[in-house]
Image 1 (cartoon, rainbow, N blue to C red):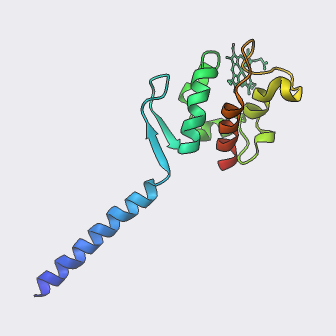
Image 2: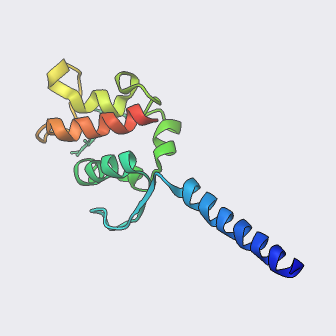
Image 3: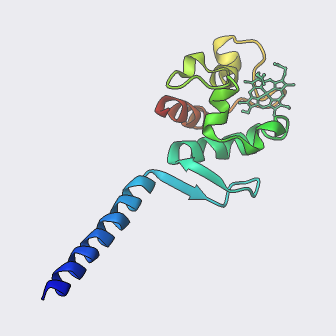
Amino acid sequence: MKIVIQSNKMFKLFCLSILSLLIVNCGKVKNSSSSDGGSVVGTAEFVSAREIIASKCLSCHSAWSSYSSDDYVKKGLVFKGSPANSSLYTRIRGNDVGVAGDMPTGQPNLSLTEIKEIKAWISSL
Ligand code: HEC
């Protein structure tokens, strides 16, 4: 009888640990189908923004290809929670706000949807 109770406890413990693992991983999305073929790990917001960066920016900014969300912050391209202070955001708004060095250089501006997705990622940090 005692053994039954104990293994029941073990089972509960096991379930709890699985549950906490699930909770910890919640909000992280692994996407292995980004356009440059690499796998991108991060929040849903980062994964969407990264898709745009991969198709519109990496051709010139190839150094960014392995950047995690945090790396953009460390390199000073993104200022957590503030798109207005993030050059990665202000530079893509380009001619719309009269910022010099409209990105992507020599190519059409990003669409409003693309700009919004990059903004959503930076705001989420
Ligand atoms: C056709 C090539 C090209 C593309 C595509 C391009 N860039 Fe750039 N980018 C440059 C060059 C060249 C510079 C350096 C000169 C300057 O600052 O204007 C630069 C500089 C920058 C800077 C200044 C910060 C720094 O030190 O790197 C930011 C931010 C930036 N680009 C963002 C972007 C983003 C975001 C995209 C994609 C939406 C993009 N660029 C696409 C060529 C490109």
